[in-house]
Length: 159
Image (cartoon, rainbow, N blue to C red; front, side, top):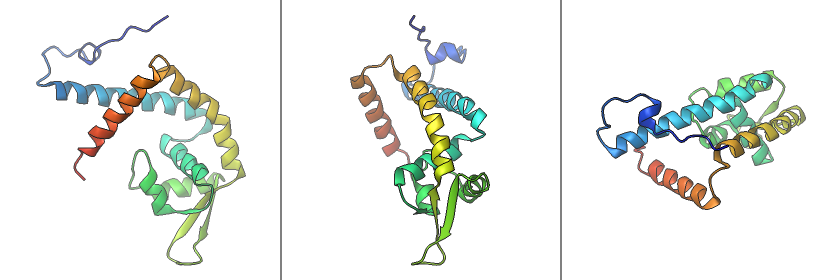
């Protein structure tokens, strides 16, 4: 059964027309991102991970070696000023290991450990199912176009 597609105007009960198509697009993007984030985080609840902690663990798994904390910060999907706090929580939970760089003693490198890899592995299927549930009705062509459009929009955001 196909879900009814509801325009953002109806979803947020917008009485007046939007001032521009850009404004309507922005509201739709923000609402969609919020709902996707809620969906993912509600599925992470049982693991006691926040979306950002999950993102850090995925970054570390993808790196396949210890990397500096600032590299992790630069790779986050949703940047945060509290990267040290995220790292501390993950280390305290036993999912990552931190060590001082031999080349530069001011830098700490972080690596995902077996417990962190096991946790991520247990979540992979759930997150994949969410991805498929949300985007499964769209063709690969549409998804690539959407990704390209979002890349273009991000390129226009002032630094």
